[in-house]
Length: 137
Image (cartoon, rainbow, N blue to C red; front, side, top):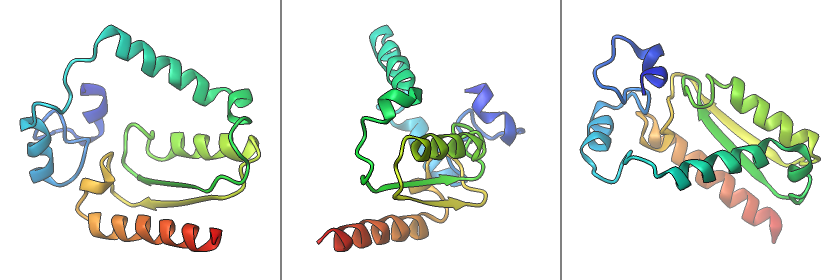
C-alpha cells in the first residue's frame, strides 16, 4: 500500500489513496471484509485476467457495439493518474469499440463512489445508464 499512498504523503493512514473522504477511509480500515490477504490462487487469477485484458486479440472478441462507460479520479494511483485509464480507452478503440464514454474527476482518487463528490459521480453514472438504455429501445 505504500506505493499507492506515495502521492498523498504525509498520509493520515495507509489507505488515503482510496478517497479524500476520511470517514470512508476509516470505514474501509475497520471493515474486516476490506483488503483481506489474497490467496495465491486469487492473485494468480487476477494476474491472468490482466494479461487477457491487455491482449488486443482477446479485446477484439468484445462486441464492437458494446457501450462502455469509464470514470476515474485524476489522482487515482491504480489508474496511474489517468495515464493508465487513457491506455485502456485506446486499447478499446484500437479493438474496434466505438461507444466509449468517460468522465474524469479532478482530485478524485480510487473509490469514486466513496469520494467527496460521490453525488455528482453517481448522477453521471445513472445518467449514462439511462441514456444507454433509452438509446437501445
